[in-house]
Amino acid sequence: MTTVDSALVRKDFPIFDRLIDDKPIVYLDSANTSQKPRQVIDAMSQFMENSYAPINRSAYQLAAEADVMYEGARAKIARFVNASRPEEIVFTKNATEALNLVVHSWGRANLQAGDVVVLTHMEHHANIVPWHMLVAERGIVLRWVPLTADGQLDLTDLSTLLDGAKAFSFTAMSNVLGTLTPVKLLCDAAHAAGAIAIVDGCQFVPHNVTDVQAWGADFMAFSSHKMCGPSGVGALWGRATLLDAMPPFLGGGNMIADVRLDGFTTAPVPAKFEAGTPPITEVVGFGAAVDYLTDLGMTNVRRHEMDLTGYAITMLTDRYGDDITIHGPTNIEVRGASLSFAFRGIHPHDVSQVLDQQNVCVRAGHHCAKPLMRLLDVTATARASFYIYNDESDADALADALEGASDIFGF
Amino acid sequence: MPGLEDLYREIILDHYRTPRNRGELEPPAVRAEGHNPLCGDEIQVYLDVTDGVVSDIKVAGQGCSISQSSASMMSQAVKGKSLLEVRALVRRFKGMMSVDEADADEAEEAAAAAVKLGDLEALQGVVKFPVRIKCATLAWNTLLQAMSELPATA
Image (cartoon, rainbow over all chains, first blue to last red; front, top):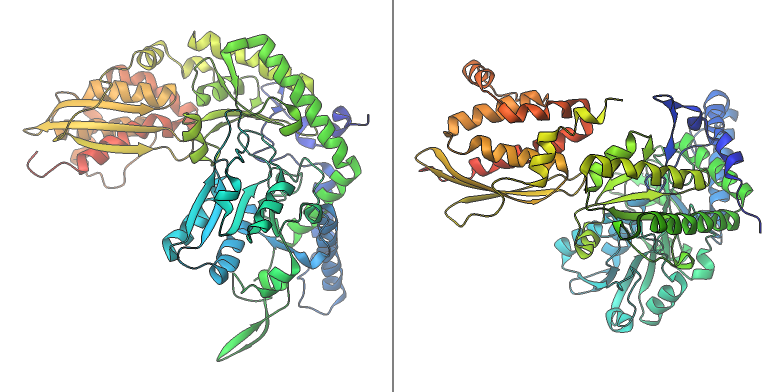
């Protein structure tokens, strides 16, 4: 079966030429943010060197070229997630802003005191805090889908939880547990209850084939920087009929059709939601990142990560037995390549500090998911996450470096 | 990259494995809670002050070796000291962590400079790992918060 040749892929990423203290970098923090291939860096440099200009407001040739690049990226990104048309992609600062856009625009227009929104216990703060803000502002009610012991969604009472709900907002992949959720089933359940389905695709989209139409979702938030693109840009995909009916989120230039002393009218979607000068170069880079991943093939990316995750779980468990606890499902069919773990009772910050001596980069902390941390009864975890440029040697380097933590803490 | 021996001194690991003054105090002891928003570590400081002197202090919560050992050593260092002495100690410790406080007057600076840190000197290596400074200062900021919540009569 075709998969990804990570040795070849790695050659595309200049950062892996760098040595720190004469040792290579073992980058296992891609769930946090991914590294950037030469193709993306070059696309952004070339755009700034040759074609940089404002978009959507100037008649000269250079600006027309910039328009084509910017809107071309939108079309590529729309195809990448199988949106029915490019206008359904709204560029935002990041996935967090995309979710805030939904909450503040769709939420304020459609939710009143007592209206129910359903979330899950494995959400990132970005899909919790904006809703809490609406709880405080207008008294909406939040309900929570609980988890099973192995870190999947416990759907036993889903229909009861969704009963009377106006929206169901959930992640397609947990940033902590790596769990993949049954997105189509959840979208169907939301619609059956008369709720809209909002998907946090931030962790899912960089690693899997995404098809928002097959899911039947209504909104999906995702981010460029986790999928080989630059930081500073993300996207909201939304069903055109919903986006058309929503009030604007941020006001300013670019988002208007007309402004008078007594008011304004909005531009059509997506400009309605893109107030001010957008991150033009970053959008071009985002488009180049999508080209890069499309060339690799997202089915291959998923296959590669399943193989690598399976290897890492087996190897770490064989080597460390009960001394290591990997949170989340062990079945690689229902999990992605983010491995949160506890090691010999050593605090994750200390684990991460010791791993850093071998340039093994992992995240330590609460991963912006404090409700989930409380559920796991930990304040923090260490998380190793794999991507297209990682291979088994990186997992081995992690395992070897963990020995150092035992040496120091003597547990 | 600085070596880990600068960070994980034996005395730090000792305080981490066997934290001193661990527990809680009943009211009228003041309770303050500190969070390290970066990593989720949390700490609770219980402070009992009688006649302007720290008569008892307890520390609860969870965190990494640096935050927990710093809290443990802090609790030992402040017990039995007057609030004035404690303020000078906090200033001296935060100074060692390269955290300067803007509002210090000359007398306070002089008092801080004269403070002996004792075991706390072991945490000096933390400065070489800037990300960990917040871990080391968490307990101290929480102590300051507890002191600010003391009733005026304490």
